[in-house]
Amino acid sequence: MTKFTAVFIAAAASAAVFAQDAAEEAVVLEEESGVEVYAGADFVSAYITDSGFVGSDSFNIQPNFGICFDLFDKIPVELDMWSNYSANDFPGQTQSSCFTEIDLSITLSWDFDFGTSVSGGLTTWQYPNTEGANGEELIALKAGQSFFDGLFEIGLELEYMISGDCEKDLHLLPYCTISYDFTENLGVALTGQLYYMEADASGEADGFANYNVEAMVILFSDFYAYVRYWGQIDDDVYTDEMHDLENVVYGAGFSFSF
Image (cartoon, rainbow, N blue to C red):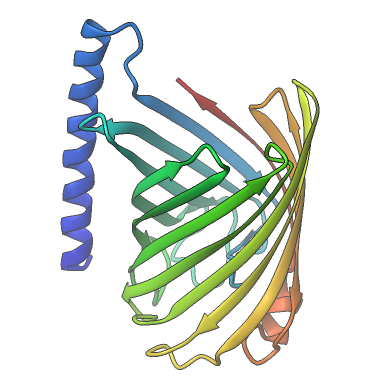
């Protein structure tokens, strides 16, 4: 574990304690605490990252947990933990049926009345039970603009690696989403995303690596099912080996907030 990671985890823990104390006080003082807790999990046929890297080509469970609160009643803060549990053996795992990734993040985000949203934060990616995989830290920024009451959204995600094997690498992920609610209990969404990598220390090739397209059905706001496909743009970045190993993920999941 890097020094940065240790400081990051300590800061996250301190913020979580602060949020818990704030929530307890708010319950006493106000009918609504202003603190939101959420939890959920995805059940997927494989684990593929945005870059097209195949973390596992078989069944995985991806639980997540988070808390949102307003720091000093002004700054929206989100603490999130996401993880990947591989139910089967995969090359590079030190054991079968184990957690192969745990991500922790601290994010500040704002939504505006005219459909614009912006966010930024720090994230650490850790890879337990994985041979030769070092932890990585990054700055993550995101901006989005929605139109027609949320029917259409375009945006850009930026990842700048500040430690790990890919230190100083820059990733750009432009995306667009079309979503529609047929009823309160049934909605659909179609998302397309590009992945651009500008490599520095990692020595990988630069360029648009791939695109991915995801079709999702949402039920009762809390349950969803989807299929996601990765296609090649530059085979020097998103190689034939990666693409041929696995390029489709089928998934289903749920998410609840309290």
